[in-house]
Length: 190
Image (tube, rainbow, N blue to C red; front, side):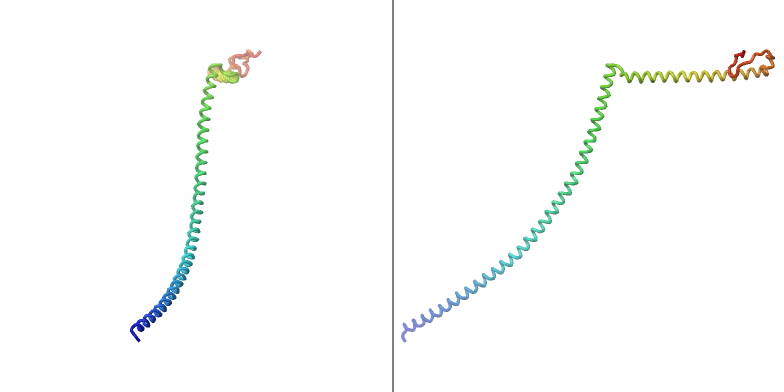
C-alpha cells in the first residue's frame, strides 16, 4: 500500500469516526436539550403553581385588608355622622334660643313702643283699676279693724278707770235707772 492509499484509508476512517462522533454529539445534544426543556417545563410548572398560590394568598390578604379598611371607614363614618348630628342639633338649639331671645326682646320693645304711642290696653286698664280697687278696699278694711281695736281698747280702759275710781258703777248711780248698753260705753237704755 502506498502512502496515498494509507492516507485515504486513514482519512476515510477519520471521516467515519467523526461522523459517528457527530451523530453521538447530535444525539447527546438532543437528549440534553430535551432534558433541559423538561427541566424548564417542570420549573415553570412549579413556579406557576407556587406563584398562583402566592397570588391567591395575596388576593385573599388584600381582600381582608380592604374589608377591614372598609369596616373601619364605615365605623368612622357612623361615628362622624353621630357627632356631626349632635353638633348640628346643639347648633340649632343654640340658634333657636338665641333667635327666640331676640324675638322676645323685640316683641317687648315693640309692645313698649305701642304702649307709649297708644297708651295701656283695655285689659291693662281693667287690671290696674281692679288692683287699685282691691288696694283701697284692703286699706279700708285695715283702717276699720284698727278703729275697732282702738275702740275696744278705749272701752276696756274706761271700764278699768271707772272701776278704780268709783268702786262699782251701780253704787254711785243708785237706782237712777241709768244703764249702759253692754259693749257700747256712754249709751243709755231707755
